[in-house]
Length: 160
Ligand code: 289
Ligand code: CA
Image 1 (cartoon, rainbow, N blue to C red):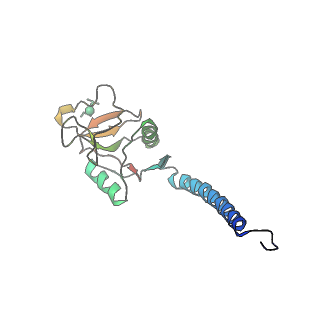
Image 2: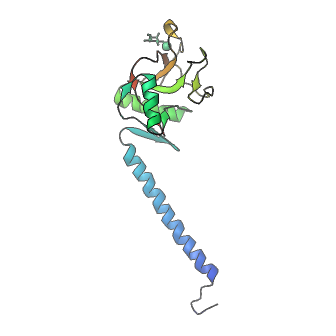
């Protein structure tokens, strides 16, 4: 033990404490910048970020655009995520298409990874496969879901 009064262990403890403080400051700063970046075209829910560019197109075009951007079409997995999707729909006053469809098997709605959906928020009476041509899912400003023809044009909403 030297004259400084600090053992090597104590010196390390002090360095860790400094690093912890710096990490906290970085986390707080990062949290703020995430909010700045998504304003006003996106929403943050936990680890997930929903973002629109304002582009409108059919399901295939929207799916492609989200993939190109390194994300995928919005696929809300719970009420909190669906509320974030609803906020974007309301703010733009335009319905979005979700990353959910029953293209493969009528009546079996799946995520883009092929898994059956684990959460839904259908409008009463939906999905009704109107005219036998509705395999995609749009979200109304109420937050409720309707199955709709995939060839219709809707607002893009990606998740990252
Ligand atoms: O083409 C039919 C759609 O525009 C929608 O019309 C009515 O809102 C309901 O029948 C919906 O289920 C349907 O998707
Ligand atoms: Ca429908």
